Amino acid sequence: MGQLFINYKRGVVFSPFYHYGMYSAKAVLSDTIYMYEITVNGKTLQPFQFSAQDWDKLTLPLYEYAIIECHNNNFYGNDIERLLNKVHIHTNPYNFTTQSNPVAFMAWYKKYVTHITGSNVQSLDVYYASYLAVNKQLQFIQKQPLFN
Image 1 (cartoon, one colour):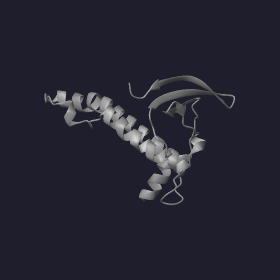
Image 2 (cartoon, rainbow, N blue to C red):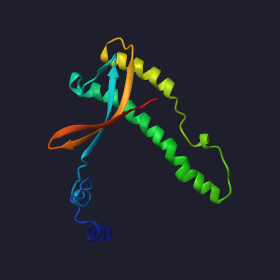
Image 3 (tube, rainbow, N blue to C red):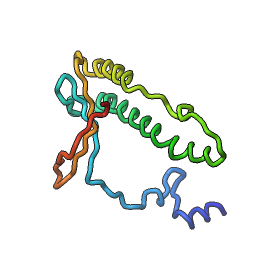
Image 4 (cartoon, rainbow, N blue to C red):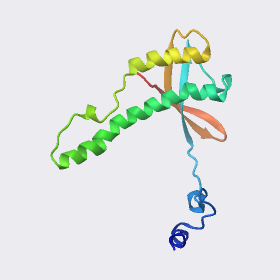
């Protein structure tokens, strides 16, 4: 009986892992692409210079650090503080955020990049860049340093 209700509400289920309703919407592509640019000793690293696994190893820590920062900036102010203020409980935001230290992260990341690239990293800059896709070409919009 439950399966009939699900079929009525969500569509036909072919197996426990494939549900037509999950994949039936048209995917909308964005015309703006965001990516990290990693500059080592004045030269921007290119993805084709590395294996897919090594490129992921270089970029994934940046994505994860950005997620922590976004979580810290939004989670307490948007959710926790609002709910606790309704019941008149005042608390310290540091109890609800992951403490991040950009200086320590960059020191660790510099050693990490040295290990992956196999070169001596003297200078390291990371930028968050945006590009516009026009006629199968990428046009640079802007980039900003990830760490100021």
